[in-house]
Image (tube, rainbow, N blue to C red; front, side, top):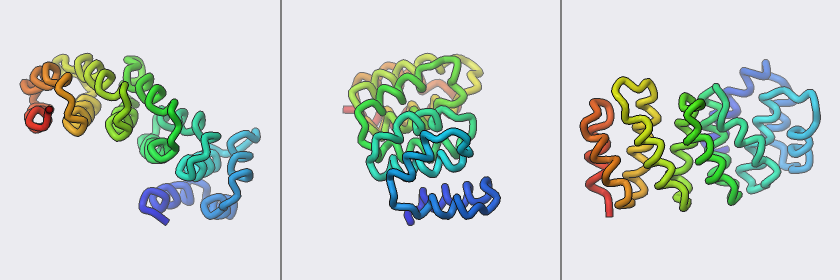
Length: 188
C-alpha cells in the first residue's frame, strides 16, 4: 500500500465508522465492483471516494468525473487524494478540468490542488493558466496567497520564460517574494 492510499485509508476508515465495506473496497481488485460504487445510487461519499481513487490510480477512466468533483471539494484532504489519482489516471481531459477549476474566480478557495496538479501534469495549458491565476491573485491583502504561492512554485517547477513578468510582479509580495525569486532563477 503506497503512502497516499494509506493516508486515504486511515481517513476513510474513520469516516466510515470502521465499516467492513470500507475495508473491502480498499483491497478490492475488481474494477467492475468499484465502478458500480461510482454509479449506484445511495452510496456514501467515502465509498465513492475509495472507488474513484482506486480506479483512477489503476488508469480506469470511469473514475474521471468523480475525481474531478472530489478535486473541487471543500475538504482539502479529498482534493489532495483526487489530485493524486488524477495525476496517475492518464486521461487527456484532466489538464482542461484542472485549468477550469484553477481559473474559476468564484472557487479560488478550492484551487490549491488544481494548481498543483497543473504543474505536475506539465500540460500545454499549465503555464498560461498558472500565469493568469497568479496575476489575478497579485492584489494587496488577497486571502488566497497559498494558491498564489502554489502558482509561483508551479511556474518555477515548469521553468517557462513566459512566466518572467508575473514572477517579477510577485517579487514585491511579502508572502511570495522568496519563492518568486527562486522561481525566476530557474527560468529558461
